Length: 166
Image (cartoon, rainbow, N blue to C red):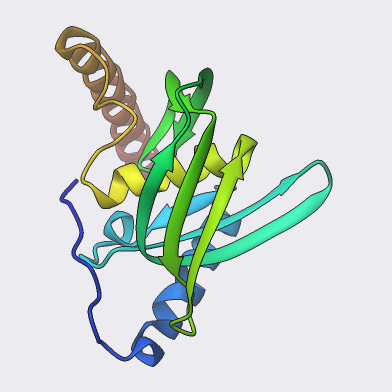
């Protein structure tokens, strides 16, 4: 995954369709966030859409930054739409102060805790060209990649078998 670039003074109206597609993709694949570089774009944009304690949170984050963070961390399992079926215990800062523009170009700064902070950090990592595998030792990364290759090969074989029987 490649790092993204900030959107400078590009008119944000041009991104409305992309943002809508990203929200639809999150919903379709049951994700809580999606970054533009996960759908083939180089811009520093992500969306979040999730419920925490019964409250829906949905937002667009353009040119996101982590301004500061707590020393306190938490470790929890994370998954990623880029790596289906892979779950990694990931250490994240418990609290972050984040800054971003919304879809209207308004700059926001907010202290985030809990699930919102974790998702922001996860998607921000994507903007920096990282995945949940990036922090794993190389040997574990290779193990995950090999496991995914085996699953992909089985999937391909099942499609070929199905097509030959049709």
